[in-house]
Image 1: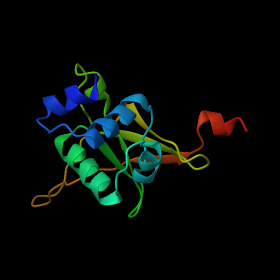
Image 2: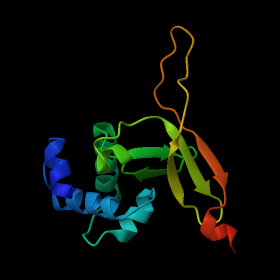
Image 3: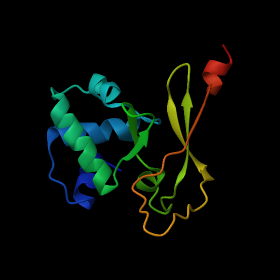
Length: 138
């Protein structure tokens, strides 16, 4: 899938910045922070514009935001975007404490959380911390 196809599918206007952001995510297999994304971009984009686009993509469901703590989030294309036959579901995330790689563990489904009456879920976040296979070999 191409970046311009995603923008058309989700009724978003085409801009050079949006196309580049999505092209990077389409080529990158793991979650990226905003600063990691900015380092990968070739076009000039200020942090506010980048932040607004990441939030817009998250709201539309194009990107999935993984909250690691109050100040640190990473973004990734959900498997359901890359493979439309797959339905999005809550899942675990893995963060390597050595290289800081974040990976969605989509095969690890999360049971449905039942909240007390009157409570409303906004976001759920499940992160497992450890070392990845590359860092564990060192």
